Length: 404
Figure 1: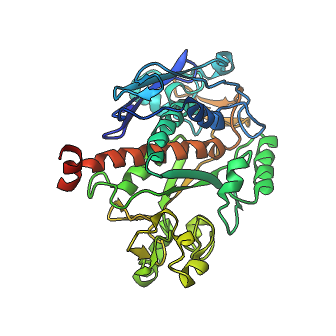
Figure 2 (figure 1 turned 90 degrees about the horizontal axis):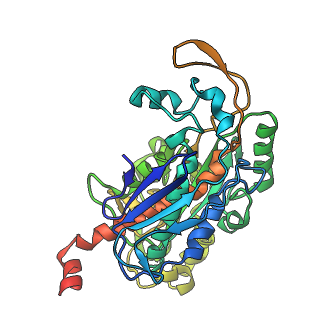
Figure 3 (figure 1 turned 30 degrees about the horizontal axis):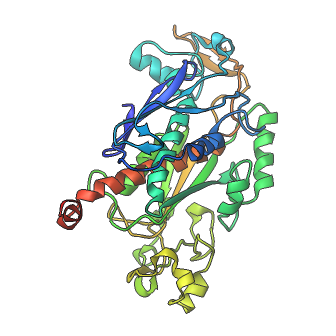
């Protein structure tokens, strides 16, 4: 399948070494002013060739809107766009025409289709994720109309953790989108690169401002859709929501998020091993838990939810209950494997089943989690916008607001 979403769908096309990659975003409402500069700024975060921490492949990644936008405003029709490939070096992959690269999709694609594009992995290349970033940026323009924001950052590189805080302000200006301990993370990436190897990473994504009740109760749960979206990113091997795997080691009395009116409007995270101990009962919006706990009526603590009557004393659930958003921050941790493209000789087989060696050339990221964090943001945006639109028909009152 090349389409994600139910109401807001993104269909992508193209390969790593084709003339272009592109997408069609369908179901986007009319009347939204489309900020091309914002879309381009998001693509610039993901584009290759920007630093020594990413592949040297240099692509402008300039998005071209083909349809669905008139005089800067969405028309309600499919938004089609392309991103041209400008810097392919297909010759670097000629020695891989009959080889299966260890850790890559080559073998699985060959067994499924009986044919494969050996030039950079073709359709399986992470080059396609540029389309997701563009689609996610358009989705964020819609989310912004409702005060919903999505941020991601790199929480760990190999064994190097961001430490006790999730610093999204640092991530916004960091060359590797680090949430903390940036220099040590950089050195870990460069060390792997010097050794012709690669290193894995984890990324934390936080969705703020999503209203309670987004998500379908059984077969299209918010957290399930988020997990599927993140697992669909190249190189992702695990996804956690809230406490994640740590919940399996807890008792109900520890994991349950107690409710109380004094916590209304306060979005809380937890001392969470899945988030590398990101502050005991810390508010991801500024670590104000203790202040808000003693001054529950302080509007500064409540933020945009000052009229809310319901609140939680913690956020072990990560912002979802029963597959629907709870109104708290949705906290996601995504784990990326080490880049399979490494410059060490590796045993493999060719299409005839013969043993041989794989010796790569070309240009590759030493840590895919870095640019992967931008893609994680995009996927969370697409899922949240899709759920927002799906929720319009959830009850009669909503429908009467539209047709009454």
